[in-house]
Length: 224
Image (tube, rainbow, N blue to C red; front, side, top):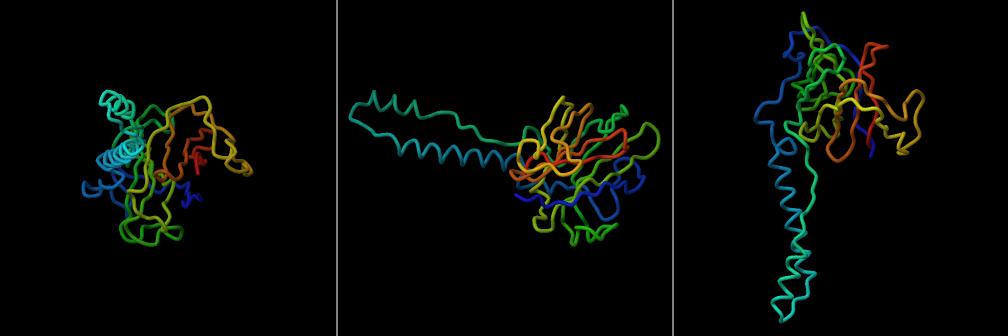
């Protein structure tokens, strides 16, 4: 699946920690629906269990012997494994993303009108943007826009953002053979500090990790 996202490695402005850039808003309680709601995933899992149970029932050949039938019933009631996010909420996360010892925040924000600066992907309101709020010990936070959802799939509830803890080796999409690695694209990354992972549910995911040498976030595709 093609990744429909535009990456902008850009420090937008110095703002007070917790504020959002003009043209964006923090999700409100009314936005916690669909795949942002834990109830959505519980319902999906229950529907999967019901389908599996019906299939198992249809596959059992019943006899006149109740003891045998009972044993067959017990054998088919296996636990159904279904995927859902490990934790909620899925539209905000925290971590020390630039390694300065201060806890930062990663957020999905929702566009209001046509945000500024514009000229790239956003053409309408209600779209998802992926941001990092880099907090400092003294002074305002820096807000970094690390990605924009495509206007072909704008619903914010289709996307997630989270924290990837430090790891010695994390293979990228091209490193796992998903495609040929492009010039300067790593086959794997070693994370010495927290990184931001974001993407579209059951579609693609991308990692934004801090480069101390370049003093900015770098992004790489993890799955596609």
